[in-house]
Amino acid sequence: MSIFGADYYPEHWDTDKWPEHVRLMKQFGIEWVRIGEFAWAIVEPDEGKYDFSLLDKAIELLKKNGIKIILGTPTATPPIWLVNKYPEILPVDKYGRVRNFGSRRHYCFSSKVYRQYSQKIVEEYAKRYGQVVDAWQIDNEFGCHDTSFCYCENCRKKFIEWLKTKYKTVEELNYRWGNRFWSQMLRNWDDFVFPINTPTFENPHMLLDYMRFCTDNIVEYQNMQLENIRKYSSAPITHNFMGDFFDIDYKKLAKNLDFVSWDNYMGMDHYRAAANHDLMRSLKKKPFLVIEQQSGRVNWLASNEQYSKGYIELWIKQAYLHGSMGSLLFRFDQIGWGAEQYLGAMLDYAGRPTHRCEDFKRAKETIHDQIDPVKEVAIYFDYENVWIHRINHINQSFRYWNSLLEIYKAVRKLGYNVDFVFEDDDIGDYQLLIVPYASKLGGFTQKIKYFSKPVIMTCMSGIKNDYNWLCEEMPNDLTDCFGLEVLDFGGNETSEIFFDGEKFVGRHWCDRVAVREAEVLAVFTSGPFIGEAAVCKKGEKYYIASVFDERFFAKMLTNFLKPRFASDDIEICRTKSGFKVLNLKNSFNDFWIANKKIVLNPFEVRDI
Ligand code: GLA
Ligand code: ZN
Image 1 (tube, rainbow, N blue to C red):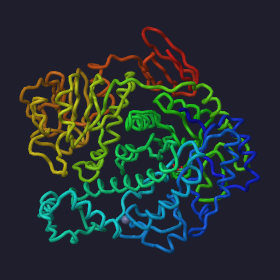
Image 2: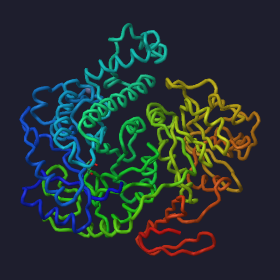
Image 3: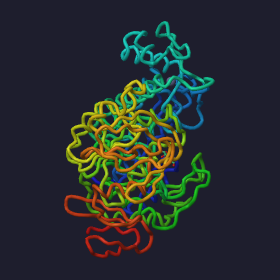
């Protein structure tokens, strides 16, 4: 399935404007639109009083013109009649303040009332349009605006039930949460209260469970919508995930969806966009959709810059290079009113097409297939590890995803494909496995042990158990495998090493490694563990005792990955039939591959 088009809001216009919109859509090759995801108060202006006339008409017009539709369920925007009748559906933040009506995402996932009303409206949508629309989007960006976590009474009660299932007894809970510390012992389940506005550090074991609970709760809410849509429709269902977003375990959220979509607002940070594309593809190891591609200026940064001509072409082609099934631009129509009045669009405020329409058309016309990147390098990833790093750390300047991106960039610039792999993925086909900063490894420990090709593991890996306790043996259950044991560590900002004739600076963290049966490839030349092992190797298992940047990995990885080409601003993807390259620059760009010089046009994508 290929999906190219835009996000469109017919409810923002008088109906007499629609025919011109549709005419322009067709002129510029928009084949799909996503609509309806914030339209609750339009279709149900008062409780039980449905008025589908606007959506009916819009859908009819679009379909008549051959435009396919992704319909969004409108549950990200509960209308005022619902909020007024049941104020308990409103979420509560971590300072105990209610988050009110007046923008969007003002609901709590635990509220039974909200679930009932969500189910009703979703069923109404599904009954009416189940046989008409071509795909579905559930809700809109779960967790956006910091809404994954709610601290209301509904959530407290529901979390207690979750805890009962997990721990069975309060004694067990007290033990696993280390509640002897700072007198946090609970006498019974109902003693549990959220750490709202606490003077200092909260219980790190509780926090990890709470984040797990929030994901489970959101997945449950999504499942409710999935079931109700599937009763009436066989069209595929997705949800729009966000970039650089880790509050929800997206691996779990993706499981029951037919395909993953994400909203790409990465601007000019091309490798960050690339990594997010690869992460989204990796969630189901399947093609994904960019369901919102920024078309230009956004409205939520401190300064919202506009982009020069052509960038849309790059963004669409880059998604393609990473295995997407297409892109929808956000948004088609531009409006001068509402909270997003400054947001850019394909049309201008007067409804005239901008160069962004041409850019879209040009990009789309160059794409005739879908890419399936072959499996080459695997980087281990776990959303719970993001949470563990976030909950408690000895160096606040360490950022898991940013440090992981340093490794990602090094691999990509050597010309290799990256998949992110999760605990239960089959990893046999990859030629290299990288395990960066993976505090908790769980069942993946065995996969590391028995992986028959090279493994590179870094500091902070295998140091935590499932309850977020530090382990007595580090890396846990892998000391024999790597031929070393980590005896101590520090959150030192810098500790240098000399590796392969060059100086590199380890950041944020350093390990004191006791070498048992490994070869030492580099020692620390500064920091608390000066003179001790920093890079070690036992057979094909490598261990790195600090956090290094792209430059270090670019060097280290050449031991495993023969550089295919050299360029910082050309991306390459290996497919079954060869290589595709993409020029990330808006000017001519050349590079060498297999002793051949290749010159690419601005933003060109080419088979080589
Ligand atoms: C998100 C939302 C959209 C819109 C854009 C603006 O991606 O899903 O509704 O608010 O941001 O950038
Ligand atoms: Zn709540």
